Length: 80
Image (cartoon, rainbow, N blue to C red; front, side, top):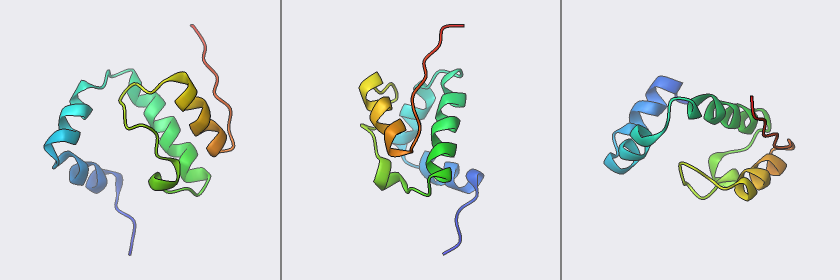
């Protein structure tokens, strides 16, 4: 099965009203962080079910640290 394009994947997810409602609550500045997590997961060769976090739009630092370790990365938080 060929992987979905980003556009097709996003459209398939947003067809679900619950997912769409959560997506619409995301702050615009969260998108680059989400992209970084998705890119790291892809680079690590992991599927979503292998790295699934709580599903919360605002996961805890502990959850993000576990996610980073699962991807062979480390979490860095900076104030700029």
